[in-house]
Every structure is written in C-alpha cells, then in structure tokens.
Image (cartoon, rainbow, N blue to C red; front, side, top):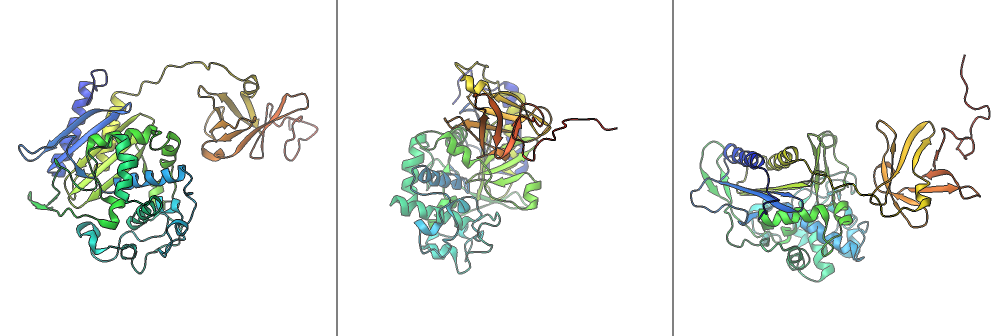
Length: 461
C-alpha cells in the first residue's frame, strides 16, 4: 500500500503499533485493524487479533455503523450541487406524507430536526429491518421530541428519512445510488451493504470474564442509511482522503469543506467539550487539534474515522466488539502520533504569476476605528484580513470579479468587502458590512459613521 518515499519513519510505525496493541489488549477486543492516511494515501496499516490464524488486516470487512451517515450525507450534497434540491427545503417538498416534513434537509443532516434518537419498538440494531417496513414504522406515533431546528439531538430515524429522500428523488434504491455515485467512482470495491468475505464476525465480550458471545448481524432495512455499511480500513482510508480534498466525480472540495463545517447548535456540555455536528460529520477539538470525521457502532462492532485537515493526516480504526476501547480516542491518538513525530512539510512558497494593480492598491495597514488591521494578498489570489497583532476577527475574501470581495469564514463569512473610491479613482476606504476601514485612525477624509470631531486628536490635562 505504500511506496518507500511515503513510508513513515520506524519510530513512528512502532508508536502506532504500540497504540493499537494497547487498545486491543486493554479493550479486550477480538480483533482491531487501523490505517493511517497522509498526503491522500494510506501510509501505514496495522492489526491485532486474539485468535491464532484468524485474518485481521486492512482488507477484511467490519461493520462501520454510523460512519454510514457520512456516505448518505454525500449523496444528499450531490443532489444539492445538481440543483435538484436546496438544503433549506422542507422535507415535505420532496418527500411528502411523513408527518415530520417541516424539518429542512439541512436540519436532518445536522440532527437538528427535532426527531427522536431511536425508532419505537424493539432495539432496531439487533432486530431485522422487516419489523419496520415503512417510514411510519421507523418514526412511530411520537416522532418529534423537540421543536424543529432548536437544538442538536442525534437521530438515527432522521437519516432513514434522508435515505428515503434519496430513493424518491433518484428513483432507485439507496444501495444502488450509493454504489453508482460514490463507491464505484472512488474505487471503494470492498464497501457494501451486506458482508462480503473476508469479513469479521461481531462479538460481545463479557464485562467480567474473558469470554465471548456472538452478536447477530441483521439487515437494517429502512434504517440502512443510518448504519448498514460494511467496509475495510483500506476503503475508508480512500474515503477519508476524499473527505479532505474532494473529488469532482463525486463532490467538489468546496462541498466537502461545507460538510466539515459545524451546522447544529450543541448543548453547553458539547460546546465545553469541543464537540459539534456538521452535515453528516462530527467535529472534535482535542489537545489543540481539530478533528473531523465520524464514529460508528453496531452490536459486535466499533468504528472510527478522524481527519486533521491542517496536519493532512487521517486515521481509521475498526474493531469487532460491542464495547471495548474508546475508538474515537484511538483514532485521535494515531493522528497525533504522526502529526507530532513527522510534522507536515509545507509546500514551497511561490510568488504570484501576476497581480492586478487595483488589488495591490488595497493591501497594507487599515484601521477600523482605532484597531489596526492588515490586509494581505495571498498566493491563492485571496485577500486575508486580520488584526495587526493579537486576537480578533479574521477572514479570507474571494473576489467577485467586479471589484468587490466576499468573506469566507468567521464573523465576515458571506459579508461584502467593497473598496470605495474617490472621484479620481484612488481608494478612500473599505466598506465591510457597514464597517468603515481607513488608512488612518478615524481618517477625517473618509465618511466615518458618526463623523470625526473637527478639532482632531488632543491631549488632556
């Protein structure tokens, strides 16, 4: 899977192996497999197994549980990018008759639709999907437990609805659409709705004795878009690379970046813990590092996928036990080990091939009132605005082609930056969402809101 120049250093490889060995031993896991991604490709894989002669490697399938939701979200974003629907559309517009159609597609993706966490009736993960043949069986008589759009509340039935939406709009099964639009283009040949040998068996490990109990592997039916998939660490490594950089055959880099952006208001404990939910992805802030991805579990299996975009490192961990190691913690540790032992080497600085003089006229120091800011032209052709020192509002801006610029993140995301010129063509000031930035603090020649005292700056005393 690796070429000599891509391989990790021996010390890094040993640290990774040690981490999964500890997880397998202390978590009492029948088998555990992990793969690390760097630079868009798998650079290390390791496995530990408790059974002599039993296969456990990066090509063996495990159930991935709720990582399935990220695949379903990709399909929904594809529909949005094609113009078939808008994320702000209520579900009722495209899938009428559910009784919960007031929730928007974006709210369902972000678990903010107010739906219950689980289906009514017996535990859906350990019973056949034939017990819930219709959406009404998935939703039950009390599908909403919170006002729509008011809070994050994880909902498996919400993703069953999104799967049904995909089937309605595409006129094909969720499984067929997923295979045609995601799995085949990305080369995920070992990812499937039902297990394909070689695959791991799911086990429950007794909490007080070192003995095992087989777990059932049910077909989840209507709930499949929430957690049905089987996959390997090799396939999920490719999927992680896609979630970092996009692939025009499936989703653009801009759309996968949108998937990684927080989209639901969490509870105070989530905020304090550095957790938020995006559009089919989770985001966690751990030890100064931002990780996006998803965790997953079904009876007999645990799964985790974590990506540090800034470090260009991702990790996948799959295990076949109902409870055991904190898989999210293991994936985070694998990312950290690589990122700290072998920090990302930045691309060589290169100057722009050309620069518009009208844009160069904008760069330099500006003042919002008395706050000094720096406006820079970056190598990717964006403008970057931020405080000259210390913390404060920062954003990059993309050119609109008409002399104005649109903010890409933070407080100024979506806001318009407009250079305002004097009759002679020189720049008077910058207007940023009604904020006036001037070359001098409270420049009396610029239209500062509230005006500038004609007596100017003075001392006291």
